[in-house]
Amino acid sequence: MSLLDSALWDGNIYLNGWRKGGGGTGTSVEPATGAQLGNYGIASVEDVREAATVAAKAQKDCAARNPEERAAVLRRAGRLWEEHAAEVQDWIVRESGGIAPKAGLETHIAANECFDASALPSLPAGDVLTSNENRWSFARRRPVGVVSVIAPFNFPLILSIRAVAPALALGNAVLLKPDPRTAVCGGVTLMRIFEEAGLPPGLLSLLPGGADIGAAVVEAPEVRVIAFTGSTAAGRKIGETAGRLLKRAHLELGGNNALIVLPGADLAKAASAAAFGSFMHQGQICMAAGRHIVHEDIYDDYVAALSEKAAHLPVGDPKSGTVALGPVIDERQLHRVDGIVQEAVKGGARVAAGGTHDGRFYQPTVLVDLKQDSPAWKDEIFGPVAPVTSFSTVEEAVALANDSEYGLSIGILGDVGMAMTIADQLDSGKVHINEQTVSDEANSPFGGMKDSGNGSRIGGHHANMESFTEIQWLTMRPDIAPYPF
Image (cartoon, rainbow, N blue to C red; front, side, top):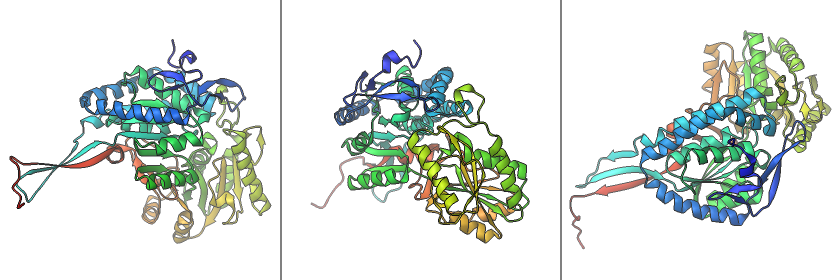
């Protein structure tokens, strides 16, 4: 039996074992062809309530286990991602519309997330504090209890595992709600890997569904922390609910990221980096380069070089293995992307490359002569579109980059000294000098400022410990303390 044999999961959720979900079934569809790939189970609100109750009980048992037991499960999971990489990658290509190298990146990072998380149980669990009293005083970290992870469609494996792995490693139970469009590669794959890795029952539940299930995994009384990756609009609603219920919400939201190209930058290398930053995975990345801010001395040449790249990037079915871009995830997103481009043109912008589509296959697009209030410039497009404008001074470049409601990632290409001066003035969760805007590593903090989220809540042991543990103050005296009562 293969890891993802549909006989196990077809039409099923996972709640203390594979079983039918109370919400019926959904169909996994290949965006490149419209072919049906299989049926996944949909959870009901009642399923979520049961899963939260089961998780709370299982978590108590898990927290009492030795740290090395949790570490061993994570190490086995990491090895299983490597052993089953080809099978998982095939699902990522077909279900999410990603090209093969992108799918390979997802399984590689999934393994690394588990290997890195396997070290968390062995880290110091707190501090010894000084005290003015005759006692020992400690600040110790303990699991938060039950964590809900809500993940999107674009990088369905990475954006699930980066929260699931550290949460489990630190002794928590997890309710996982993947995006229904990628319920298999972003949900079933994780469930099967941890099932095979020997994760004790009840610690991970798979609960696909729509907005009602999203609300249920946030509101369940047993849930203390929510890790959400998705749109800013949805993140606001989750944050509001979490605040009302006095829960922690770790929100990684949208981005409209600037790529600053300095005078004297190598145009060939800059155009290559820029094309990757804007067009990788059809631009469906929160870190995608959405605003190209280019020095006026090289602006025309840059537009020409980037347009040349866009014109020659092959677009088509990623299963063929011969394309650089696959399909936009669904018709709704396709119409949104095209609508933004066409509105920009009506407002005076010029299409230097692309601007057309064949079905869900949208051509890499370069836009110039945009107004600053155009949605194509100020909004997150989430499609393969590269809007370009020029600047004349460093101060202008900084102002243009910071003039956004988002603050997730910024890339600067060119002279390092000038880039360092600019970097110190940017309002962004990530700044990459001589790299484009899309970058992520399991051991690095990930998060955004402003409307891109509430800080670096994932990645690296510091952020993961902060996100998935609580601090408890513990004191100890040699005898019962005397009191004046």
